[in-house]
Amino acid sequence: MREVAGLSLYQRNAFRLAGVSVHADRRDVRHRRQKVVTMLEVGADAGLEGDPQEVAAAFDLILGDPRRRLVHELFWLWHDPDATCCPDTLHHDHDRAVRAHRKALDTERTSRFPSPNERRHLDLLWQKAGKQWDQLIRRAVFWNHVRRRIEALDDRQLDDSVIDTLRAELPVTLVRPLLQLATQEGGRQADLIRQAREWPRTGDLVATQLERTAEPIYQEVRRRINTLSDGLTDPRAIARELGGEVVPRLDRMAVLIPDSRSTVRLRNDVATLFNNCAVRLIDSAGAHADPDARGWLDTARAMASEPDTLERIAQNRAALDMMVALPYAFPGRRPVVPSRRTAPDHWSKRHPPGVAREQRGVFRRLFAWLVISGLLIWVLNRCAEAGVFG
Image (cartoon, rainbow, N blue to C red):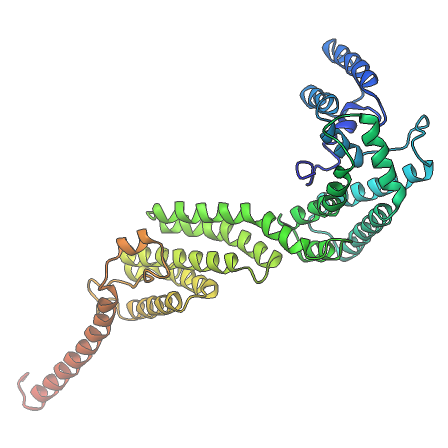
């Protein structure tokens, strides 16, 4: 069930790719495979949508593990004039649910930034699919059909205990495409999350599934942050990648799981990296780092959550303001980087203790410069009054 759950739930269905009825026995499937293979070998059109490798894999699945075959049967069309396993109305109702769910999924995938009317239409499609599937799996005759299919497949790997597994996993499998769509770019994230939370028979499962769906994205963002911080040589290039790729992903995660601690921590790490980009640029370009460094510090301040990170960002912003206002008053000044608690080890090692004291020295030099300037002006005035300059 977990193998098939996702955006390709119907598109990659083995019976769809092979063009075989879910009621076909092994002899009929082998006969169909031989016919299709022969047509493909001579370059004839077999009327199938998959490529030869996909078609071959579909036949292997149907003829191989009966557990996987049973799962693929659940998500393809049951109607067959020759089928006598149960009332034909059940087959029609099942196929209506499959078609409704498939239509909602396919329409959603091609409508990433829909208009308000299109959004309402998509919501109705998902609601219709959820309602039809829910009505279907509530019926005892549905599970009687599954039991008869287990008997027909006649394999020791299948028994009635499988029904309990299918009953528990089916709602999760059906809602999984919604969750995967919600992790992608587009203007429908909030709507998709709402539809997933309202999907029948999911309860608290959606929150758990959201965490599982988001974890690969979290891992990729973590790897990218570490890679960028290890190669902090071109702050402008790093800041562009952060703003173009990393931040949008975290914004999507904030919509998916608003209270996720992982999202908060990663946003703080990104804020630290933006701050370090600003520090590096200020170190190399001085006052000319403005306005790039200022923009990065503003972004860092909006994303940071740790008090230490916010404090260092504020100090660097103040230092940049002074450097721009008085470019000659601060020879050799050095901005402050985040403390060890808010920055990875390689950042802390790169910037040893004592940097904060240098920041305080900036203010002392400014005060000394103002005092000396005042004294110089006072001496010049006294000299002028005394006629020293003739």
